[in-house]
Image (cartoon, rainbow, N blue to C red; front, top):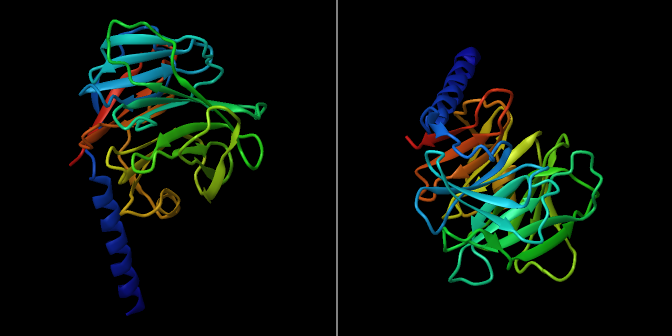
Amino acid sequence: MLKIVICIMFWIGFSSFLSAQEIFKNAEANGTIENRAINEASGLAASINRTNMLWTHNDSGDSATLFLINHYGASVAQYSLKGATNRDWEDIATGPGPDDQKSYIYVGDIGDNRAQHEIKTIYRVEEPQSLSETEITDFDVINFKYPDGKRDAESLFVDPLSKDIYILSKREAKIGVYVASYPQSTSEVITLEKLSSIPYQQTVAADISADGQEILLKTYYKVYYWKRNNRSISDTLSSPPISVKYQIEPQGEAIAWQRDGLGFYTLSEKRMRIEPVLYYYARQ
C-alpha cells in the first residue's frame, strides 16, 4: 500500500513538473542581431514607449551606450550616456521612476568578477522619445554598496508596483536578494538592504512582468519562473520556482519579459563565430 501511495505521489509531482514546462512554448529564433557593435549583450529590457522594441547594452569594455532593437534583432537606434562609464554593465530594466508620467531605463553597472569594488552604480535614464537623438546628457546616478561586503551581480529589475530596485548576487552558494527602496538617493551612497538568500548560483539576468506579478530568473543553463500572487518579492523568490523551457546559448546573459506578458526574450553574447540570436518564448 505504501508503494502505491509513493507511486501516486511521484506521478502527481512528475505530472506537475511536466505541465510546468508547458507554460511557455519552445524557443523561437526571431533573428540574429543586426548591429555588429552589439557583441557582448549582457542585458535586455522591453521598451515601455515603443511596442515590440527592446533595450540592450554590452558588457564591460564598451562605451556607455544603449542600443534599441526591434523584436527581430534589427537595429533601431543607439544612444550614448555622456559622462557615464561602462565599468561592467551587466543588466538593464525598464519601469517607473520619479515622474509618474514618464518611463525610465535602469542600467546596472553592477558586475565585479573579483569582488574588488565597494561602490556600484545604477544609471536611471528617462526613456528617449526621439529616435534621432544620439547623446543623453541628463540622467540620475544611484551609487550603492552592499551591507555584507563586495559582491558580483548580473541581475537587476524594478518592481513596477513600488519602484524599488532589486539586485541578485551571482556567485555565492546561496545568492543574496537585495533591495534599494524607493526613493533612491542620487546625492549620496546608499546601502542596500539584504532581504534573503536563495539557493541558486551563476545567476546572470532577471526580470519582472509589467504588472509586477511574474518573475523570471536566468542562469547559464536554466530559466526559473515565479508567480507572485501578491506576495512580497522576497517571499516570492524564497518559494519553489518552476523551471521553464530554455534553449541554452553560448553565453546567454540576458532575459526580458515581452511588455504585454505574452512571452519573454533571451539574448546571448557573441562567442567565436556564433552570432547572437534573439530568442522568443511565447506563452502557451
